[in-house]
Length: 188
Image (cartoon, rainbow, N blue to C red; front, top):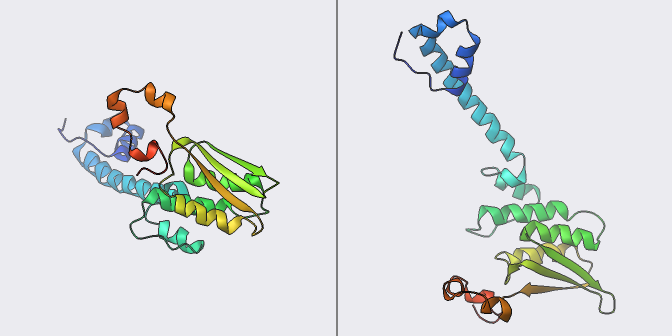
């Protein structure tokens, strides 16, 4: 019996498929470890390639997605925000409706959003319900919305801030952990 241990997941799977007599042969164990390591790497590469085919999991291929949609990312923009811009572009095709606008907005917000229309003023209002203050990538959202909204319609944005009742029920520590921008629109 050898002290050699197969660490490769694929190598462990392969040795399970062999007759038990081969399990204790050092040469077989070494070969399965070597081949298993290669299969593990192949599986990892395949998983990574598959991940690049979806915007929500793309990492190193994000530039390809941006090029496909004609997006020039801002310098230093976080990966999640870059993904949100691409998702909004993907969702922003088709006939304009309030639902289309909501789909585009939700690609950025990842929270609860309400979209309403006021026919008298021809204004759509995007109201952020579950996020306090303006989302960090509000400028990108505004650009995406401007691209899909017909020019005769207006869009306004409504943000949620902490109410007096919410603040009254907080401890001092909880209040200190909120940025000033959660309390009022003019504080930052």
